[in-house]
Length: 235
Image 1 (cartoon, helix red, strand yellow):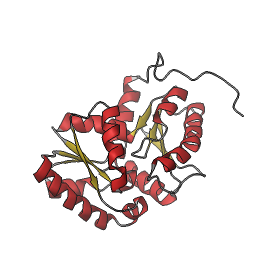
Image 2 (cartoon, one colour; image 1 turned 180 degrees about the vertical axis):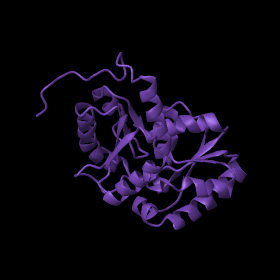
Image 3 (cartoon, rainbow, N blue to C red; image 1 turned 90 degrees about the vertical axis):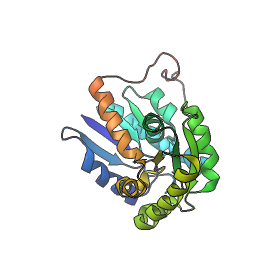
C-alpha cells in the first residue's frame, strides 16, 4: 500500500524527523512518502497558523488522490483542515489528533495531552469534545516550549514531559499521555519506561490506523458530513 504523510508546516527538519521514525515501524509492504508544503508557517502553534497551513495541505491531499495513494495522514496534532480534506478525498485521511484521542480513550480511564504553549490548552479541551472523548480527557500538559525547540532538543523535551507527566499521574489519575506534536515522534518509549503509563506517539498511531483502514477497504462515508463539496468557480 502507498501512504502519503503530510507535515502541514514547512519545516523540512521536522518532516525528515517524522520520516525517520515512521520508516522504523511501517509494514514491509507499506510505501511511505513524507512531504511538507512549500508555502505556509514553519510551525503550527495557533489557530492563525492552522488557517495558513490548510490551503497548501489540501492541495497535497488532492495530489494524493490523483496519484493513486491508498491513504493520507495529516501529521500535525491540530489536524488542520481535516474535515475539508475528508470532503475532497476518496481515500482515507487520518488526523493524528483524532485517531490518537480515540485510541487513548480505549487504553485508560483518563488521558492527558502535551502542548507547547498554555494558550493552546483550551483548544485541546474543545478538540476532545469534538472527538466525543471528553469524559476520558483530563488535561493539557503545557510544556512552555516552541514546536521547533521540541524537535531540535529531544532530551530537554523528554525531561519536561516527564516532569509534567508525574504531576498528572499523581494529581489527576492520568493513565495515558499523548505526545501532542508530530515533532515529538520517537520520544514515547523513553517516557513510557520512566513514567510507567501508556505514552502514545500520535504519528505512529495514525500510521497503524491508516494501514488497518486500507486493509479493511473502508473509507469515510460520503452521505452527509464528508460529502464531496459542490463544484463551483473560485476566484
